[in-house]
Length: 136
Image (cartoon, rainbow, N blue to C red):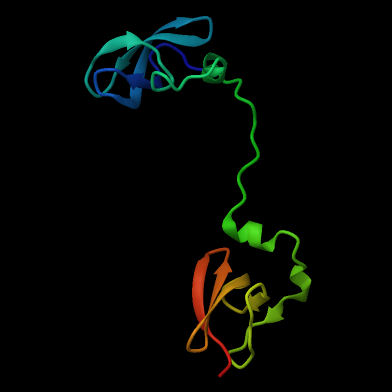
């Protein structure tokens, strides 16, 4: 919920961007008139770029947006359905194939995604992708 004088993001027709605006007038709990903090233009509140709004846009602007599940990261997708308790402890001497769940002493649990030439593997960890050596 916004109040007069507070800042809200709105489409500015002059700037052609969604920018910070100051609320000047309210209708019920929804901003009606706003003033662009960048160019100073005063106009009707538009929460989205014209042509991309939905019927529920005004309700969402009032703070009644439906709660969504956060998207799974690539790391979480790779670990989905894997038994982490069976993860191999990483060792430079061991051999790995794509799909192996590995427990590294510094990076934690990861999943081998690519076996590269020259005894290298790519493993996706929560912190990101790491290239490690194996079969030495």
